[in-house]
Amino acid sequence: MTHIYDWFSFPQYFSVSCPKCSAEARASELPNLKNVNNELVRYKQEVVSGSFKCEVSCLKCGYQSDSTEIDWVDDAYWRFEVKGKILWAWSKEHALTIRDYLASTDRREEGFGVYRASLLHLPKHFKLSKHRAAAVKSIDNVIAQHI
Ligand SMILES: [Zn+2]
Image (cartoon, rainbow, N blue to C red; front, side, top):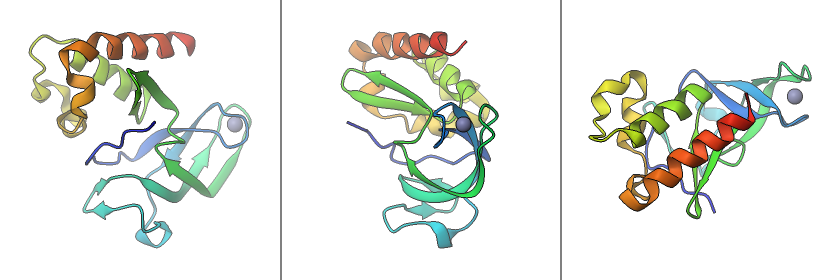
């Protein structure tokens, strides 16, 4: 089951699973609205979810395309199972930021720079006191598998 974040700002680059080898591949920002399916809502810089075409390049297998169909959030590379819902991140750095945010005692978004907006819109499910430790553990486990 996938939980879609209500609103977030797409960064210029984000990680997707390579369509060829499933390794972490780099995807570029959405090129324009023409590629966006109706399910995807774009409001200024904010996106809810859906499929769109973007540039993808994979360092591992050399896959490269400027019109790869991405189904967000299913194709997000950094995904973490937390008590029945999927927490995702744009990048490893973003995942670590979410982890640090959830692990912090006061959870003030101000100190998290470019990811502040995404933290503000993190679903409640992951912020619940009974789920936070599981979220932190899940992020740590997944990242440990990719070192
Ligand atoms: Zn690849």
